[in-house]
Length: 218
Image (cartoon, rainbow, N blue to C red; front, top):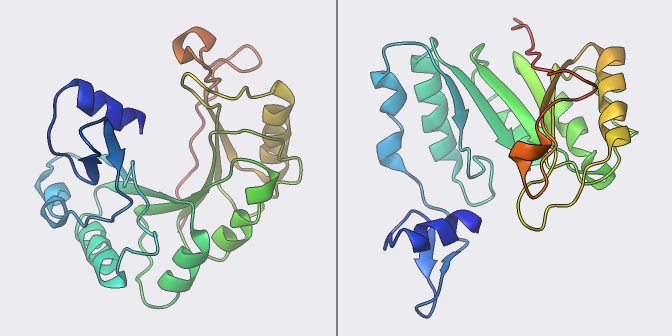
């Protein structure tokens, strides 16, 4: 929604998935738009890249047709030089859809978002998905997750909420995840403290930067 407001300030009259409402600020319509023209872009990149697929959307949203997800998979299969990271809040659909229908791709990392204790169940679905790397994004972390089980999860990303109405992230919540990473062997990546001014709060945790990445698995 904040991006929509920025586009409004830039006087952009059309943008994917956004529309003006009664001449006021842009709002998200809730409609899913399939960007067919972007599918082949990775095939034109000469050098290997790390690609965050659907950074502002969810590939496993209920309104995304399975046929379109297949097309995304085909492009990722055709470009093994790139590493693709797919994050979803719907790991239950990802688990059901992938099953035996989609090929296992070494260059595709699959993850789910976990914001608090109420969303920890998503990790159970993620564990059932075959992937070279399975990762959990604890961002924005808005509550304790002391019961998080990162067994068979290879990477944990932690970050606080940012923006004008950002809810604070407590140090003990981060401690719980860091301790679980140590127990399970998951790589620990601390992204930011967030808040109203994320540059000021920075991204140091316990006196240092934590930029660990997982090792690729077969």
